[in-house]
Length: 435
Image: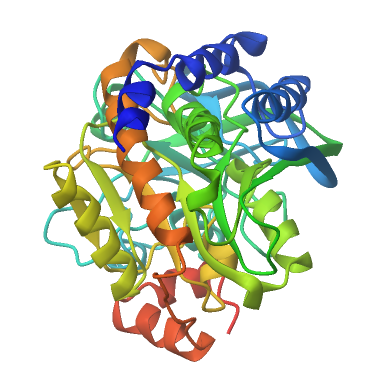
C-alpha cells in the first residue's frame, strides 16, 4: 500500500498548522507567555482533529522572563544588542575583552575577573566538539566576569538570542546580551581593552507552561514518544525552531491515524513547553514518567531547515540502522550522527539510557536562522516538509512495530560516552552533569 505516500505529500494539515503557529502573537511563543499557551492549545486541538485520542494539556510552573531594553555602551557609543533570556536585570561595566571563539583555552589565557567578555557563537573547524552558548556563559561567570556578550558568527546584522540558564538556576548571575557578527567584530577591533557597560532590563516572574499530549495505536504499557517543542524565542516567528517540528508532529499524527492498525505499541505525541529555557517541559515529563516503558523517543527539533534529515542517535546502533533503512527505501539521503547530543528535549530521557533520536536537518556548518529575527516562514519549503513527513511516518511505523527492538543503556554507558566525546567538561561547568 502506497496510497498514504500520495496523501502525505499532498496534505496541507501540517503546513497549515505551521502557519497557525507562526501567526500567533507574530510568532512570540516565549516560554510562559500568552503566545505559548495559545500555540499549545492550537496543537492540542489539531491533534484531536486528525484523530489522535486523549488530546490534552499538562501544566507546570516555570520562572518566566520577559525581555526589556538592553545596550552595550563603549566610549559613549551605544551598540545594538538584545538581552539573552534568563539574563538578570542590571548594569555592569569593565574592560572589554574579545575572547574570539570562547574555547576553554581562550578563557584560561585571559584574566577576565571584573571584565566584560565577548565570545562567538561558533567554534573553529579544528576543534573537536561544539561548545554551547551556556558553557561559554558559565565559564565567564566562573572566571568572575562582569558581563557576557555573545557574538553571532553568521553575517546579516542578526544579533542572536538564547537562554543562559543552566541546571543550577533559572536566572543567570551576570548580565548577558547578544550582538550581530558585524557589531561584535567592530567592538573587538575598536574597543578591546576599553571600558564597556552592558545594561539589561528584564522582568522575572512566576509563569505557567504546558506540554501537549495525545496518543494513537493500541493501548500498551510500552510507548514510542514522537516529540517536538511548541515554544519559541520572542524575537521572530520561530518557524524553523521549532514550529516546523511541532507541525510535523501533527502531520505524522494525521498520517498514522490512517495506519493505526500497523502500530505495535502506543505512539504518544508530545509537544513540550519551555524547551528554550532549560528543557523545562521535557524535564517535567521525565521526572514523572516510567522510563522503562518508553521504547524510544523520536524528537523533532530542527526539521525542514534543510532538505536532508539528520539523525543524532546517541550511540544506539539500531536507531541509526532504522533511519538508514528508511532512507534507502525511499532513495533519499539521510545523515546519521552516532554521537551524544545533550541539547534538546530527548536528553532528559536519553541521559538515563532511553533510546532516542534528535532529528534535525543537515544545514552545513551553520545552524541556519534559528535564534535570530530571521527565523521566519519564508526560510522553509513545503516540498521539504512533505518529503520529510513521508520518511518520518515510515520510520515511526517501523519503530512502533513488534519487529523492531532496541535495548536501553545503563546510565553509566551514556556517561562514559559523554566523557569519551569530551562533552562532560562543558556539562560540568553548566551544572548539567547528572551522574
